[in-house]
Image (cartoon, helix red, strand yellow):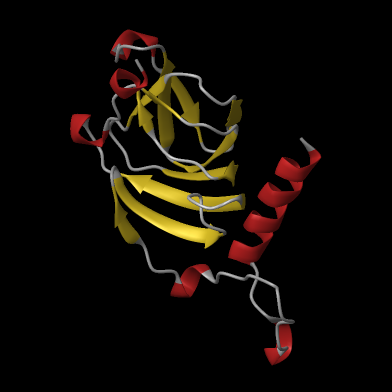
Length: 150
């Protein structure tokens, strides 16, 4: 838990900080200036990788900006690692179970967070507004559709 807390704190600090007075950044420091961040396409919309690579062993942090509406929904799936989600802006709707059920969605507004243990089936939906969510975990990780897990 302490490592996850540290990673979240470090990632948020790195995204909002800029080098002071032109200071050189020491080797090994990873810093993302949001003014220069480039979002890339992902399964659900766009993603900004910050630290690490979720497909490889070790900690990772990334931001996701899913599409709005049902096209921005994920079918039930799991991940092989425990993940922590922090809602940066907008509202993130998450539900738990092996079948997508809109009545089970829980609305999490900016500033909300939760930890999801490895192997927990879940699904998400982005409703009326966009959302940015920070996701942290320890790889290797991947999305495993519930149907494929049977």
